[in-house]
Length: 305
Image 1 (cartoon, rainbow, N blue to C red):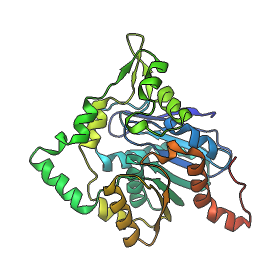
Image 2 (cartoon, one colour):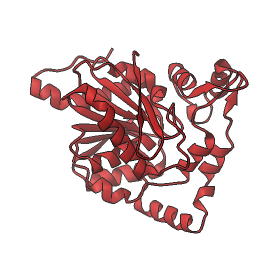
Image 3 (cartoon, one colour):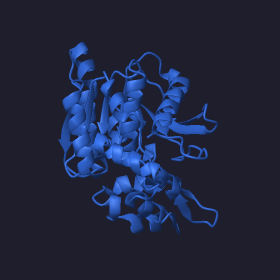
Image 4 (tube, rainbow, N blue to C red):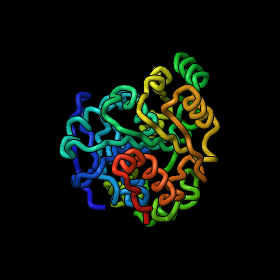
């Protein structure tokens, strides 16, 4: 993919970075990644979408090439800063439809953006957003008060995970078919290795997103999530992995039942189904986002190659 780097010195005092395609007059995808990843991690899927969309990839605080920015500023503030960066840098695309797409953590951030700025996005597709049910958020809040939540199992495991390899080939072999990368297409894992890792001082490679930052996010949660989700008026499709986290399945179902603007579609695979089958995921995204455009034009866009 031919992309150009962008940066924005945000109001929180650090620099957000990402990449965008050259404006071509096509609708724009504003894409947000999952925790620990970066926008280019999803390159196999995004490459399938470039014939139909321009891309604006935004890497959240401490991910990709964005600054660490000190402490994690939280899910809600991250949504505000992503909107700030889009308003500052997205003007180059002109007056074209803008669609929100996000995976996991990035899917939740995207939903908060939809609630905060309903006029920005024409449609949205959220890929397995980690929507915590209200009861789970209540437990998180209680645990947070007594200082327990930062020590949850997922966060603790993340802090201990390997972050350095001899080279990219070594990293690929170490991660292939292991943990969260199980079932990923090889090209998807290479996209992670090539873009979510950077050269280390000793000549090896290391994670761009430090495990401590990834754990910090796993140890936190969005404030006022369900009151925000109630405000979403943008037509939104949630693509849910059939083998995703049970809590996410419950949260997604609750949102779809309570908000008529939101629907869901089950996809084969787990939480990272789009890395397991990039082509099918891209086609589902294309069909939903371009449905209104095609209807207005009286055309049907060609299937993805």
